[in-house]
Length: 532
Image (cartoon, rainbow, N blue to C red; front, side, top):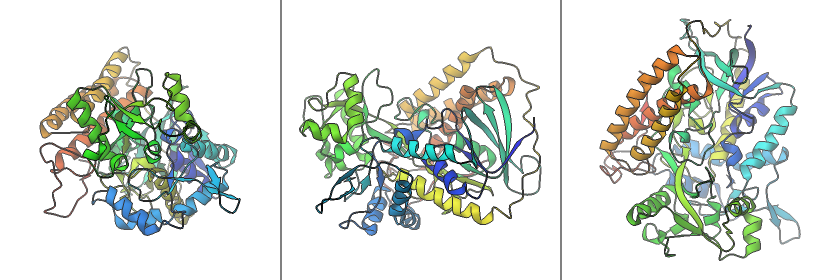
């Protein structure tokens, strides 16, 4: 079967992948790879919004300082300025593509974009589409991508591995394409491309409890690691403080905007507690709020805490949070009259593939954008609603850089087809499901919100054994989506554990009882891992 050739192969179909494809499509032939349905991605489930300086009372400098403060000393200040300064331009770009952001009446009788406030922000600067911003962005971009003749979309296609010149024994250093599993046909295809862009999202599915959809298995991070790219700051996993606690409410996030609009966190007895942990109370950064909830749950032996916004008018709640209101009502929780039971859950991967200001990785021709990347924007803790902004800005940066080199970049050579001659169909799928469950459980127990070196060492031993089992299984049986995700999860788990062990301090999202305070004896440093 002949391999397909494209100018740009985009692996991932969220806000970063689709916006990049649209920015390139008038001048390049694009393939967009989506592991399941095109819109099934973290973007679709993003509730809060996109941070951008649009209010006259706000300023670029204020947004920069808020981001730096949340990042606990590890943000790259030049990258922060680069991203924040392009906020308005990116919002305008989305408006031109029909994203229906929520508006509010102006004093002159017109209207303007409604801005809400979230944790860590000192001003209202979060543009949103009610409480389903990600869905509005994703579905708008989807319509444009499907309509563009230069964008070819491959749904239910799961990337296996990158193909590099080095792997083929060639002298040059560059990415040449990727092997992709057509899930429905159960056939591995070879995609060749001048450039490859990883936009495959984060890795929160490595934890037992997560706000992310099932696809968030760190595929891009693992593929880049296997291909020889450096990975940075994987110890900084953001746990969202407030996911709905209900046996049937799998992975449903309660937006930070609920706290931004006055929601209060309460113990089971109805008493508040956040002021005991931070003077900013409910609007403290997410790491502080998540640790406070975790502490109180463990102290009390409680299954959850509660988030209460019922003191606000019912119409206000229904108009601002229609998705949350409707979803909670399905579980007989009327948030206009009752508090919402909530628990923390793994939410966002602040580390990832190390990139420069144009989203370039260590491997020529390979870019990484969105949650899969470590750009320097988030540092040790991502500030709310900076993630979609990062997707949009680095899609723009990468697109501009790719277009500069597109005409001079030679087409990749013919590539070897995927070889299945030595493998058979699996008759032991229970091995995959068991190992999948084991990884997620020990990561939650040993590498979660609060860590110790002893727990981390225990986790590292477990993941080494599992990787041996997975490698043996991978070498003998035909690949499936579950096996590919398990293989990637095991690598991501190792990267998180190794990064956490290297950081002998508590900073941002990484909190260890062995080193409970930041090490201020030296300048803050990134944790950078290089492939062996």
